[in-house]
Every structure is written in C-alpha cells, then in structure tokens.
Image 1 (tube, rainbow, N blue to C red):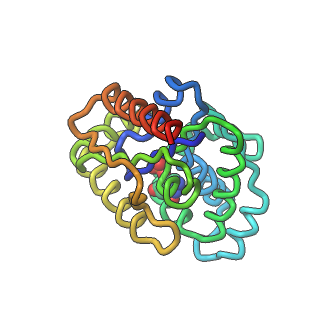
Image 2 (tube, protein in one colour):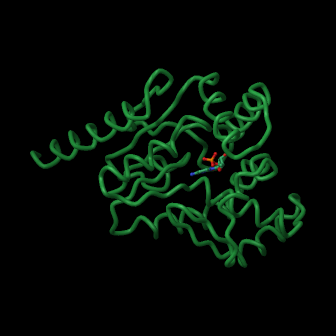
Length: 221
Ligand code: DC
C-alpha cells in the first residue's frame, strides 16, 4: 500500500506525511531528501554543474541510505547538511536531469515494494507510483507556505526574511513545474487539499478518512 503525497515547496507535505505514516503504521519516505542528498554530493565533490558526464560519474559513486530520521551518503550523515541554502538553490536543477530521476525513481520503487509506505514528493502520484489509489496533492497559498518555511528555517537557525523565502519558493515552484521530465503536477485522480487555513491535525484526519473510504469502497466492488 502506497500513499502518495505531492505538492509544491512549503505546503506541509513532510509534516503531514510523517504524521499520517505514524497514525496508519506505515513507513515514511521523503523523496525530496534523496534529490537533496545527491545535490549535496555533487557540490561537495566540486563537480561543475555544466559537466553532465561528471555528474553521471558522480551518480555512479553515490551510495544513499535513507531512513525516517537519517540520511547518509557514502557513510556520512548528511541529515542536516541537505537543508542548507546552497543545496536548496541547486536541487531543482539537479532533479531536472533525466538520468538522476531514473536512478531515484528506481530506488523509490524498490523502497516501496511490499510495504505500507507514505511517500512525499513532486511526481509520486504521476510517475513513481501511478497505480496507487491513494493520491493526494497538498497545496497552500504562497504567503502561508513562506511563513511555514520561515518557521522551519528559524528552527534550523538559518537567518532569512519572509521575502527571500517567498522568492526562493516561487522560483523553485516554477522550475519544478515547468521541467520536461516528470514536472510537479497534480495527478488527475489525486485528491486536492488546500491546507492554507487547516491545521496539521485536520489535514491528517482528512487524508486518513479518505484512505479508509477508498479501502472500504474497493472491498465492496
Ligand atoms: O521537498 P523538497 O523541497 O525537499 O524537494 C527538493 C527538490 O527536489 C524540489 O525542489 C524538487 C525535487 N524533487 C523532485 O523533483 N521530485 C520529487 N519526487 C521530490 C523532490
């Protein structure tokens, strides 16, 4: 059983996906963290972003381990480092590369095999697990998303202001939804949720009720 939660930056996907996973006794996978981990690895290895051959080579040497609370690359704990500003600034570009997506999607499908798992990202319902009946597209207006990100950044002690964050989110949304391969978009059969005026608890309850309804409906037919 796969629950797919897609949506733009700052919509609350991680918070909601983690909580839903906990409540239904499923695993949780943050696919954005996978793209961030590879972006960090490229930057750390000082690979030129124009050099696709070197990026491919770097991908061949990239060993990822990801659990619900720890991300490691080639044995190094990068859980905090993948949230840094230089990673955020380059992750949309790195994740738009076809060969990078191919490898990540393979890993994601492998991790989702024979498990109950809640997976969050941008293309989970459209590309990675298109056959799952449990698809949600989580959105919120830009002001609210920027406010939420600002709170996260404060927790991580990154000094930023709301305007900077709003601009970064907007740029990433444009890049992520206009790339040629697997752009961010709502799957036709995903349930759209506007979380602007909703609490985390309300969104989670709504998702869990939808999952139960869908499961009940499919067991009648
Ligand atoms: O969820 P996040 O902000 O940590 O994701 C970082 C970037 O990774 C996001 O800007 C686009 C990319 N991404 C993607 O292309 N596909 C996914 N399934 C998840 C993230």
